[in-house]
Image 1 (cartoon, rainbow, N blue to C red):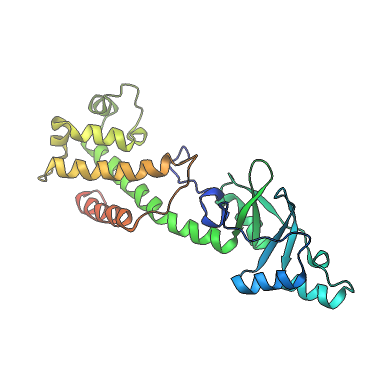
Image 2 (cartoon, rainbow, N blue to C red):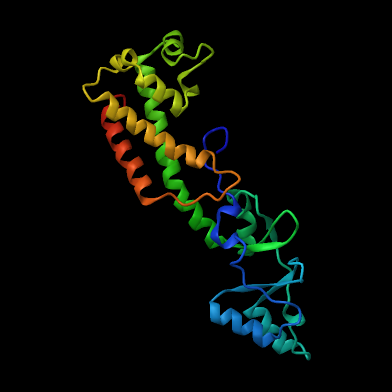
Length: 247
């Protein structure tokens, strides 16, 4: 996550960007082979790579058709077009303008080897899948902080309750801080709720674990949120809305 809690989805998190999934051509392949692979796999483009997996260009059904019409030599070279690349570690949100212009880009690792491909559709689909838990987590944190702010209206009270003497405002509380505060019987009593403390705090702990999975994924593949996780967040938020009388 970024410093403001936003989930950062990187190109490496997309299945199509991972090694072993890319279908490619070499310069010695024929137009017929290129056309066969494109139609067999139902894809729109194929990279042409060197033996070292560096990019030469791209071949599409359109470029093949043009090569057949315009080139005397019916060879793959006449169908190769320039292609864009993106870094494996690039943020998906940041490459959207490039994908909107070119519809796809090939994915390079730190040694300039082509790992995979990312299309505009891949990027938009992935962002949609990860935006739901992001929105839910954001609203849960805002509501929990507002509830605590009502119960502890002064900074001094908040500092004592959270055991954080340097705390400047309720917005500086993490989910872990909130969980710690709510586990204290004296702090819980300040809420004035007639619900089971242990059950509520365990719900907060579950939300924290889900959030931490997103926050600490960097360096590994970020998997899509499980349906159970989204249901857990949705259910807790629905409950929290009822408890948050300040809404």
